[in-house]
Length: 368
Image (cartoon, rainbow, N blue to C red):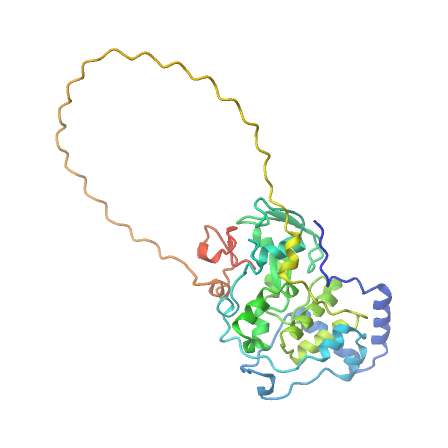
């Protein structure tokens, strides 16, 4: 199966990169240093969290600085840039009350086709999908992984399922501190399961991304950064989330090399059902004729019964052994606790693994 994401456009050509580079070369002094500073910020992966909890952008203590005119003028005109400029700019809120499972829930089966959202996205993004029951993806090929541009062979199992994880492009943590606290519970579940915001990606790279925004993390695959930023902008526009000033600057700098970058719209889960492979069913074996019945054996001659054996002498019961105290158990109430402890993903047999945390029953809990 081959499936191309609607937002994996190839609008960027060598000419686009050349024109963007020429535009940037015309900038002088501090104007040219803005893009370099943003790139360094994305590479280091550092973030600064303002300890405030705004329910709306208007409640922030001070107005953040907008991207400079030089940075904005360097950006190539595109639908994505227009949408970015329409987003509210405000300070981020606090993560102190963030609870991923409690606020956003887990994967759901939105269309009732026996596949939860993780399986739907695996079916959408992998090639050569194999499913024994038509509900769970057993194997496939991620070619290429959008974040690393590598090919990953996916095999479902306790030791391998986490090789491919489903990433929220706008992480749920970032969504929470940029306006998702204003959404209803149903809207937060919709955001967490929206195919527009989901990608099958390399597991370790997804763990490195975590809850970082665009000013702290961008995909190692430079060729995917335009699409990556465009998806984040589309999600934030759809759910009325805001961006911070450093986040907007980083996005603007990326879009400077993305002339004509479109804003993706994604697909609803019902549209993904068509990609589900039929279950693998073995052909039934032909029926065999029943064998002729064996003749009944002759009745045996009567035999005199043996005398009953004497009752054995009573034996004193052995004393019961002293109970051995059980080792203290390691457990997590939910995947949020496991991630906070740095234990996720949890593999079956490892401390802290519990079936209640393994929603798809593949032997790996809290993997994506």
